[in-house]
Length: 370
Image (cartoon, rainbow, N blue to C red; front, side, top):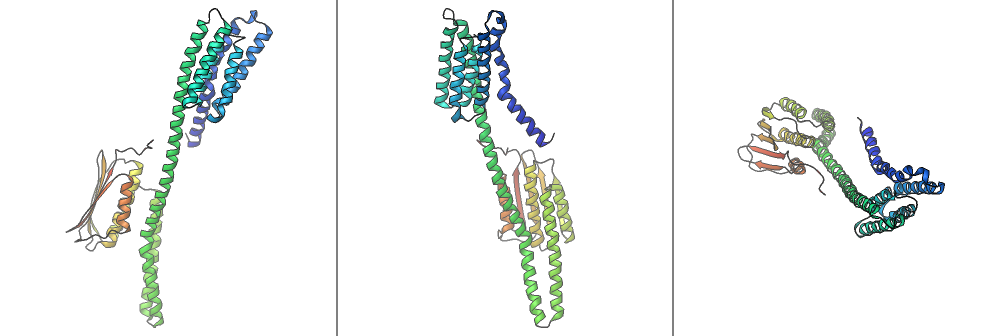
């Protein structure tokens, strides 16, 4: 089922539950149906007109804002009391009026509306039968209290869903901002160093050409061309990564790059199916860490360990160069920011080697907090 079809189905279901329960208002017509032959044309006509008016008012009330429902509610209550002069079936309509009181009003207004329904029930009971109103009172009050409670519960659910939608919208906005920042970091990492090198070599080639040192100038120009081709390849790779962030594919691509550069890699991967968000962020972290290896490793020996447990994903990247001090540039800062999006931890160890350890939790639910 497509997303559009699913949303359309949900909309139809929601509309049904707004007016579908009106089917039960048919009980209002039962006394008229069973006593049809004994009733006058005026009585039957008035009963049907009151019923039609009530249905129209109910549908309008259930679909209007809280601030505009008061007049509709008063009209519904008036219809119920008026219809009581013609049929005892109004006990049913009072219940639906109580539902509007619970569903559309808030706090003090809800209590006042509920009490007004009870007053209307009592008045109508004595209009219908001043000598024995107990049956009508019992039925009407039970229905009113029950449907008032359902209406209150429905309003709570509606409020919860509205807050959930607002929070989801805020999360989408924050996610969009985070994505823009991530893309900006990726572009900086990919383009910054290469474009700086191209600019310097192009400037050097121009000076060598002016000094008539043509062989050296041509050499620099060739290096500029090579850097431009490599930069184009990196940009294409980045675009491909944006389309599909998959750890297995990412690691395979990065291993090719490491092997092309002559790296000796100790690789260990033990993962199953990961949550989509975790896998996407983990893929970006691994790519950033390997990019740092390609740029900074001197002896070209490294290790990549990726292990998944029930509660976390652990990533350990080791560069076997002597490392006494770490300067945290855009690469490491980007890794730290991405890990923090999942509540992850990052640990860096230096000495005989450089070790980067990242732990990303898997069990935490990334849900809206209300």
